[in-house]
Image 1 (tube, rainbow, N blue to C red):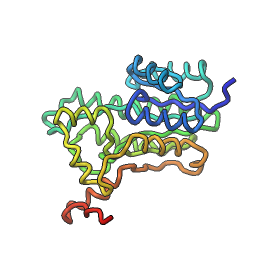
Image 2 (cartoon, rainbow, N blue to C red):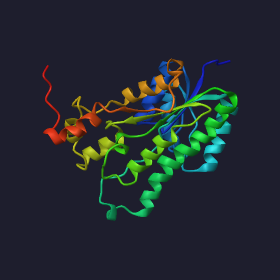
Image 3 (tube, rainbow, N blue to C red):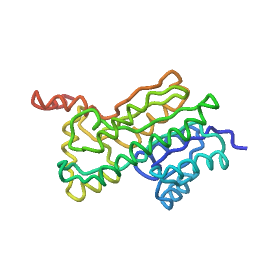
Length: 251
């Protein structure tokens, strides 16, 4: 019988979620990949040698069924990363419709909340477990992301509860497939977030995964309720525009 602790990662088929799956597996967890794209979840799980349990975090009934199925098929889930989310283009408010606003909120905020409740309530009853939510540094500054930024700010606000350890990671700009697609389409300039960051580069997805694995581990047994930016110093650099921008490296 497999005695490894079990962790489930939503949005685990690609990007930050996949990086969390890899980091947790490397740390000895038995990992379950979840994603709304069932084929992608199965393919990622097969490629990485982990389990798959696809479901849609925008569907409350699907979340409840998945929490039940995870325990029936694999055993008690003691680690959860809520990485499932959707982006939005930077646009004027009047050009961003209510339906798209609702979609972002439904997945990013409501989906995170319902998933954390479904799996976290079981952890709380057992008296053990940890959750990592995925926020964003865009929730900490004024940006033209009128649904995405507020949705991630709300995720960070949710990450202050008792019963289980729960922490939030707020990534900076990460070269995930959606961002790369926008860059390739000429919709985003990668040099702008690079130049704004104190470290002068984008964050790598695996860097987020390693922090998530740490926060779920016993090494972080006294850490709860925090919002940890992992942003290559974007929050630092965003203030420097007032003083002429980030200073050049001196090495």
